[in-house]
Length: 396
Ligand code: FAD
Image (cartoon, rainbow, N blue to C red; front, top):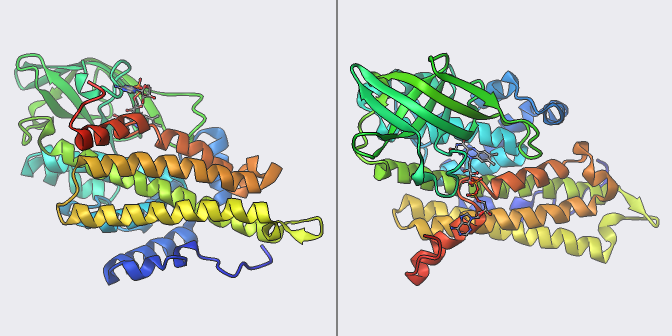
């Protein structure tokens, strides 16, 4: 990269750092420094091509400090929602697969144990998860229950000393290699959905990697059948009486985080596209000097500013207890869709090279297809917001 643009850091355009508290700012700067020092784009692109995960990514995550995001105690960092979102922007900026691995472990899996586990269960798993000695996953989705996840059919049958699980889970991130999976299953006696910790190697549980994914290829998603899988009573997350107790909060926080990681993906793609357009010459002029190229770049920059402002405002509202599901769902849907459209503009201005992974715009474009879909699809999140705004449910 030779020619410098007049404004290199897009976060300075609307002075993002001035909106952050001192703590948020230093967290962002520290995460940026760690991830810039640890980043290995060649490795990420190779892993992407081979659709492989690497322990090097766990090591990089460790550099960011203990896992656990907003969990207080048990060796976890106790971040605010706003701090979590600021971190997620930086994770997404590096790589969306890395962000997904990080957030499934640190967010969905650990937060579920934190809200649904007893004090003994938290003390048993969370400190080791915070240190990445144990990696976690979150198993809610089933082949026939995606958007309609709470219709899940996996069963839990009470037996002396524990529970027997039967069913089929799909799309479970990290579950091909992780140590523990929070599995949600329906109690055959009460019909209530309950959480269980299934451990690697338990009889009746064998995960299979989902192949041929063209998005988030570094993340390993598993399909697995639970076949008379015995789980001891100690692994039943019994502190939550109902599925919605706490789990709702885990999913809401996670949806906001996904929006932030999508904004981060756009941030990374925009930076790469701007630099490319400064460096590349056509018709004896830098691409960045052409009107149409500037329009594409500024459209992407506008989308980026709006996405980040939405994410930061959402974090503030969540920390103040002011955000309902409507704000969170609309933010997730809108930011992921906006990022998906804006990253396509970044890809476009890089021309033919834009489809080569080394140039940093095609991977986020592919990845956003999954981000737009998981944690509630665009449609479902729009309809959740629509239901709260109109008072009319359009989807059930
Ligand atoms: P479907 O529900 O079949 O939806 C298909 C289409 O129909 C979508 O466009 C949807 O918007 C639309 N649609 C469905 N219902 C309605 C309706 N009522 N009104 C209007 N439109 C509707 N799950 C986990 O539990 N753990 C994980 O770690 C995990 N990781 C994932 C990682 C990846 C890469 C992906 C792709 C998925 C992951 N998921 C995970 C599952 C994810 O949450 C689901 O894919 C998602 O909820 C959508 O479900 P579905 O794929 O079955 O789509």
